[in-house]
Length: 97
Image 1: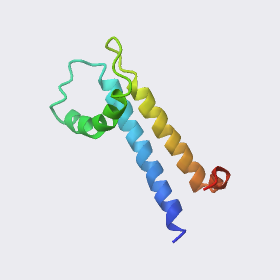
Image 2: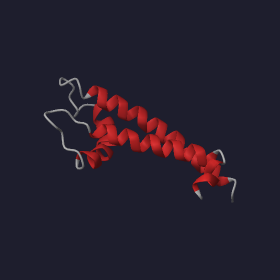
Image 3: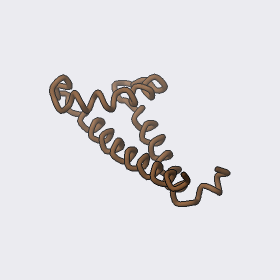
Image 4: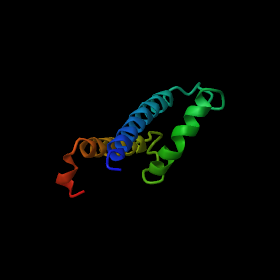
């Protein structure tokens, strides 16, 4: 049973890393106003990333046309990836887990 925990943590870390790449692509593509987000593959990218980004847009609304909410989204995912990496490496005892 305890051997599945590191495997699950590694899976979560891999998922977070892939999702971070998708978020970076989404944010960079938002700088190009000519992209039609209703065409593939942009529609799929938008459907995967926008629900997560919208959580942070409700906290920090766009200021003057500039959206700073992805910064919080990236910070939270990076924190989780770091935490899971430390837990998978056995350093979780220092956190009291």
